[in-house]
Image (tube, rainbow, N blue to C red; front, side, top):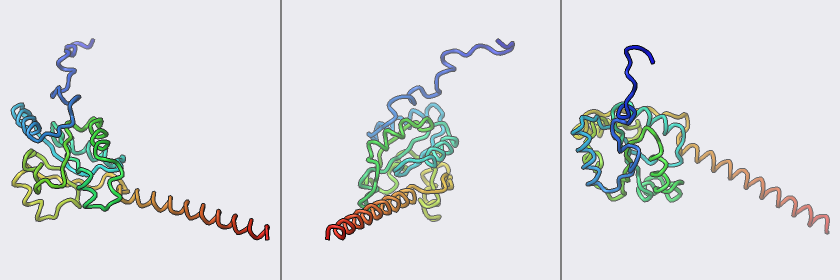
Length: 201
């Protein structure tokens, strides 16, 4: 043991907020409000971000890591299936809300996860949490909306995309690849059938 350093106690090894390792999904908004109030009493700097987190990829993980770096506790609002369907079409989301929520609760930079419903009032979660820092992406809000949001947040930080390809682009490439394979398989089957018919004739 080096001189001048005392061994770590059990308390020092534990996270600052012990409940971070369990009960991360908070569905009830009143319970979430109580958690936020308790965190503020402890002096925690609260960060909030929101999104679909569909077909989760490395860009999401980097984004969440950078978001968490802006405070002590990161709360993530996840769009429910109907909200995504209305915004992105009937084929989305690829991953259902219960799976997306579960995946996010296993991301070490995320402290709490809650669902955003399609019928929630505008900016309901932001107004409830009143984060010290709201993390957003460039395409989420207009410049005018960002100004309005500052009424409910200590500050708003806009992060650039953390991956070279978005989820939508990845899915489009996947669909194109699948379509091409189906086309090749159908063409091969037609050619083989035509060849067989020609030989039999």
